[in-house]
Length: 122
Image (cartoon, rainbow, N blue to C red):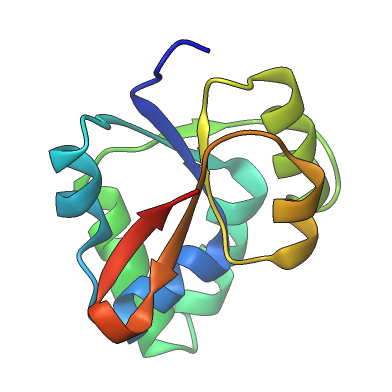
């Protein structure tokens, strides 16, 4: 499998990084990741949450500074769209904490080790 330099995020991963004060972007860039993909449903969800939630607002601000590519995946639910995209793009890393998504994809998964304030690949 070719090593990809792109990563696709889910909402909870981004919010948890802010909540836990983990600079996932710096850590990802040190690992050679330089293309940040966000499903349109995730971006919409984050934007909606940001109106009422400070953590989501900060996550959205940080994300926008990295000029992500918004990917229109066309399905109604973010989780299903992430699974579909992951299965069609096995070289793309998937940043998610969702157990269901993690169990349904073969991609390199990026999670969080809260105790060490860092991201982990599996």
